[in-house]
Structure formats: structure tokens, C-alpha cells
Image (cartoon, rainbow, N blue to C red; front, side, top):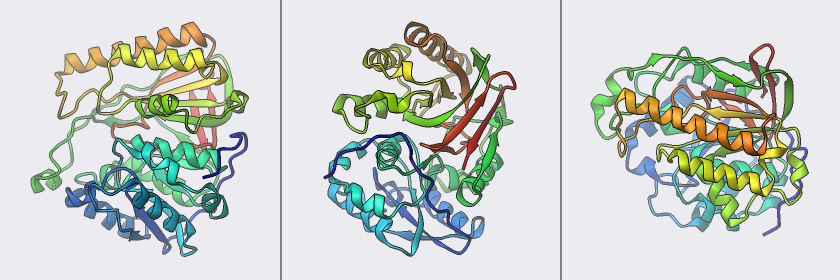
Length: 354
């Protein structure tokens, strides 16, 4: 397949309109086949609340699909002129194996908005290297399939990102959560999940205004891309003055692991290139790592200190905003990936361009 190009000037693809068809694909895991309840609810909301007609592909509900099969679905979704946008059903952990099968020329010839996060960091970085602005956030099962109703801030952000070009101001979450319930239990979907009051953003070096193109994503996936040397610009000046997006997953990497990954990015010369860092609110609870409120607070605090330690070492002047709601917690604000992000430190405002 063709090699990545410079990442300097990704372009926004045309937006869909209500009534258009949107591809629903599973570039990572076919979990819709195992957990149909949140998936079907997400499809229903795409139709009723967003006016879009979802179109599935062969691997969308298939567990154990091959990287080639998932790449074929990506190519088919982008190449079909009747499909106006593409959204991931959910993430996973092996999308990096799909990248070698992707044809950049198919994507460049058929640019479309793509929505996804977590393991979809792979595809987001790939699209950016193809010169296409994509969108970090809003998978079908997690955000659209949320029990009770979509979080209103998620719904508003996704609607704007889908249909409305131009600036959109992000706001700190009024209420949020990171504790999940069992998708296999129908009772999960009978009521709203329990949330707690928002805590606002924390700013570091808020003495300037930064406006630049974004890059980054799920920290664990970025670590794998760095190890495999994929979708990282050869000329790191492509990232100069940009906005780095980082967030961690339900795997809940330790503070030590977070620091070591950032240290590797610093030694490679990446951290120093970005003028601002948006750090997503960390997920502090999972089914594999249930925590008490005290343990959760300690985990979040340890992660923040790990980030600050790395940034003080490699990029001490960078403007940092902690606990922005764009990661694995709820709500999830959509961030343009490769698009314009404005971080106004003196005014404590973040504005993205959809």
C-alpha cells in the first residue's frame, strides 16, 4: 500500500444531511454480535434522533473477522458514493493489524467524515495522514447506545459535528460518569445511568491562546503505533504548534505506564512539538478494575502527576487542560482529528471547528 504523506493540511470532508446513509462498521471488534441491545439502540437513535439511515457491512456484527475483511468494509464504505459518513460500532484492541491492508488512494479519492475513538485511534491517525479530517468520539454502542438517553452534551456535540460546519465551544461536563452496567442485562437499559456532578477543567500554563491542528487519541493505542512505527509523520515539524489529544482507556494503565509512554514520546521529539495538550478525563472504574471513590480519586491524581512530570521534563511551557470530556467517560465531546482546535488560556475556553 502507499506510504503516509505529510500531516500538515488535512481537509474537512463534506458533511452529511438528514436523510443520508451512514456506514456502520467494526474496524476493531464485532461486539455488536455479542451485545445487540446497545447496538440496536444506537442504530435506532441514528435514525430517529439524527435522521440518518445506518448501513451495515459484512464484518459489523462478526466476531473474529480477519484484518482483511475489516479493511474491505472500510474500503467499501468510503468508496460507495451513496454513503455520506462512516461511524465505528465500538473499539477493540487489534485495529493496528488492519492498517497494512488499507489503500490510501481509496480514502483520498472518497473523503468522508469518520467518527470513532479508543482503538479507532489507528484509523483516525491513518485518515489524518491521508489528508482527511476525522472526528474523535461517538461510537454506536457506547454513546448512541447509552441507557436511558444519550447524554445531552454528547448528543449536542455529535449533532454539530455531523451537520454544522464552523466553530463549536466545548463546555465542562455538568454531570459525568465512568461506572458501567452489564450490556447483556436488559434491565441496564430501563433507566438512566447514575452520574455525579462535574468537577470542571484544570489548566496549566494558561497564559496564551493556542490554535492548531489536533493529533493524538487513546494513549495505549498511540504507544502501539509508536512501537510499530506507523502513522507517525517522518517530519515531526508537521505537528508544530498543534494540539495534542490524549486519554486513557478502561484498561486503566498505571501512572508509571503513562509516564513511560509520554517519556518515549518526549525522547522521540513529539511532545515538544505541540503548543497545547488536552488530557481527557481518565476512566477510573471498569469491570476488571472496580474501585472505591477513594481509589478512583487516587488513580486520577496519580495519572495527572505522571503527565505533569513528563511535560515538565520535555515540554514545560505547554498549555495543558486536564479532565476534558472526550475519552472513555460519559459524556463524550467530539473533537475534530486533524481539524482546528483553539485553546484560549486567559479566557479558559476551548473551541473546535467542525
